[in-house]
Amino acid sequence: MHTKSLKELSRLLQAKQISSTELAKLYLDRIAGSDLNAFIDINADLTLQQAAAADQRLAAGDTTPLTGIPIAHKDIFVTRGWRSTAGSKMLANYVSPFDATVVEQFHAAGMVTLGKLNCDEFAMGSSNENSYFGPVKNPWDKAAVPGGSSGGSAATIAARLAPAATATDTGGSIRQPASFCGVTGIKPTYGRVSRFGMIAFASSLDQGGPMAQSAEDCALLLNAMAGFDPRDSTSLEPGKGGDKEDFGRDLDKSLQGLRIGVPREYFGKGLASDVEQAVRAALAEYEKLGATLVDISLPKTELSIPVYYVIAPAEASSNLSRFDGVRYGHRAKEYKDLGDMYRKSRAEGFGDEVKRRILVGAYVLSHGYYDAYYLQAQKIRRLIAQDFSNAFQQCDVIMGPVAPTVAWDLGDKADDPVANYLADIFTLSTSLAGLPGMSIPCGFGQGEKNGKRPVGLQVIGNYFDEARLLNVAHQYQLATDWHLRKPEGVN
Ligand code: GLN
Image (cartoon, rainbow, N blue to C red; front, side, top):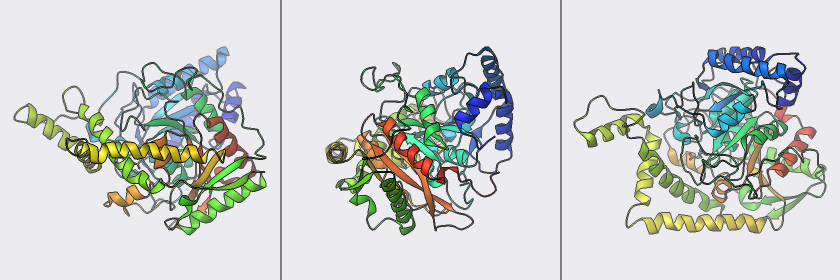
């Protein structure tokens, strides 16, 4: 049952061959038996209540294609009834009085929440090792990181602990963990998915999206997830990308004549040969499907690292100023006065990486340095977006690796923030430009210790071109079976 697609699960639920309650129990059991540390909070009573309500809807025929299907949420989306921690000690015991729009929408569609997924603290990281709740293990090789920041989401899909999960991507956090865990994930165009109730990291970059086994599943999930939300000031408005649409409408289109841009800068010396091999094999498969490869250039790729690591911390330092121990979140037990209370609460509540970013962010925004760093970064951000619009004159989609290597070992880069930052080279520019991007499983690398480590193919589209990305991914998934492979021991 746990290997079935969302479409199949939906059919079984509608045909009353399984109930939502049975399905929820099956997944709760799988979660309880897992040692991956993928979940931060579960609440079986609440899950089963939601499943019972879904069963009533199914009995009454009041359904959507997602009614009765379980989903787990990255613990960046706030939820009523489950803790909402953002992977931080600061919010370790926080229970939100409201649901994020995304959670609300899935609930309205009849989906059943399985619990909250581990992630890097405030979504800052590339390995899930920055979580206050400890790292998540990669189900393909428990010595490896699952990627980050949505490591819990990716590991959960790979280990079949849930058929669907939410995730967020600020600079790669949907695509990179999806790649490291061999699952499918899509980061939509910035503004497609509401950020209301998504705990903020870098607001001009943060974007929610789904992870699942296949592109077809992701399309179904995105249908429920995307759409205008008046409570998010950067949500795309109706007529401007904010309309409800069927992202699966083009799944079956042929790829004959598709022009795939292959950026030179994504195949340079930093790319591991095993990743390159798997990605090149995927490109060859696309040629068989009727696509043509076009050599393109994204000359500002390298600059995306310094630009992102100025802009994201700048926004983070502002967003995280709200955690002061006054209204909610961690408060120091003993303090002398108000200033001391702020200082101690923040010193105790935030982890090292979060503090590092707050310091960098406050610095680049400060008088005297603003022009040299923040303003400069904003200008280059514009040029990075320009690189993409030039490229899309020559091609329909862009393909390359998601990350320069397969998943690294747990602990390997834990003490080296810059090594983590450098590994984001292929995902940051898409986020800076606000473009949609996907990761789809396309093979395995050599970097194995105790098991295989997956490789993801990145597919980047023009603004609002999610339906095409999903079509391109789906056609590949009809021709290959990488997305159906399971880690050893996952039965
Ligand atoms: N790895 C990047 C960072 O640490 C991206 C994280 C994300 O997309 N949330 O900021």
